[in-house]
Image (cartoon, rainbow, N blue to C red; front, side, top):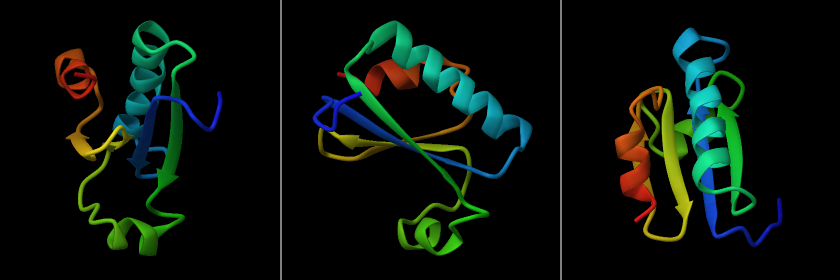
Length: 90
C-alpha cells in the first residue's frame, strides 16, 4: 500500500483480547471489500504503547480512527456491524 492511500486508519487494540482480534479481522475484510488498494491500516496495541494511546485520548478498545481524509472520525467496537464503517467512508 502506498503512503498516499486515500484512506488511513489507526486501530487501537488491547493485546490479543478476543474483541481486538475480531476488530483486526473485520477491519481487514471491510477494507479489502470496499477499499481495495486505497487504504493503509496501522494497528496500535495500547498495552505496548500506553503513553501514545493516552496522548491520543484512547480510553476504550478496540477503537478505529479514520486519520485521513480529515476530519478524524472514531468508531468503538469490533466492527462486526459494517454500517458505522461505511458511514465514515462517506
